Image (cartoon, rainbow, N blue to C red):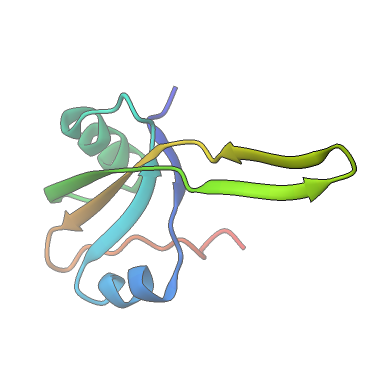
Length: 95
């Protein structure tokens, strides 16, 4: 089972792609060694650096017939991966 959930494709993350940095959503229990191993085997690139961050789920609420219902989105974890100069990860190659 892979520790990678999905690549994050936002305007900010896409700007980092030009510098050789790619952003992924990963399992909360994943460590840097597991993330590096998965990315190198899945995309065939050499990883030079990994930065991870834990994210806190936002509070959400909505009004229903039964009253106000509130809850929280799931917590998560992100990894920003720097690859060796010249290596490229192509997210759109399989479309």
